[in-house]
Image (cartoon, rainbow, N blue to C red):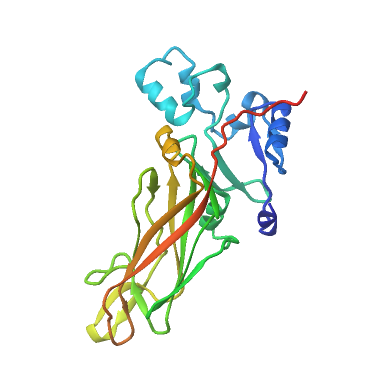
Amino acid sequence: MKELHDKGLGLAGISYDSTEILAAFSQQHGISFPLLSDPGSATIKAYGILNTVAEEALGPNGKDPAVVADTKVYATVAGVSDRLHGIPFPGTFVLDRQGRVTARFFEDFFRERNTVSGMMLKLGTGRPSVQGTQISTAHLEIKTYPSDAAVALGNRFALVLEVTPHPRMHVYAPGATGYRVIGLTVAPQPFVRVLPTRYPASEIYFFKPLNERVPVYQKPFTLLQEVVPEVTQEAEAAFRGKDTLTLTGTLEYQACDDKLCFNPASVPLTWQLTLRPFVTERPVRQQ
């Protein structure tokens, strides 16, 4: 909350639940930001995020195999009940001080969520207060860290590489041919989904010795690699009893200065995160 406030952002949750249920949930989980009750899902409908899949599952086509399959992705894995009436497609909206939506973040699977730090990184609001690892090579300075020190199954978070080429040095960006283009690879492991790496815009460099123009990075740049530890029943069983998530990867690149090109290089990387439990219990109402 402090980091969000320092960036000039507030935070509120909106749900179709009653104020009594929201109060119990806040107390049960130590939530300090406002949870707003949306009776009749009026705000949910106004934002265009009423969960139509859930509504269809409760209707006459509820037993259609395609509807059943969609329901497990977009609404519930616990079985259809009247409680699904009025639920939203879950997500996050970012508003400015005039109430205008400036960004939004949604997932396909209803049990998955972007982390706040991951969203802030994609919005370009600065790095989170997470300890990083500094790596030096003959051509680059690299600082790498995860967007979050602790994640739960279903959290969509980012692995970050802040890369600074040495003076008069450049590395080749996506689109270059004939050279080893910079690339981040995360080693595959069961029930961990790796999304496409986000590469920033490059610049065209004129390499005078060969009279060629190629896309490169020669100023500091940042790579974002989003990862989701899955939250299926199989994934929950595989991660049960584990309190850490370790990811490994490799950064490959080829660097050149204004006269020479060097051999392709490969840098091993490791990230270790605390694995938090996935919260599923319902709020306990206070008597």
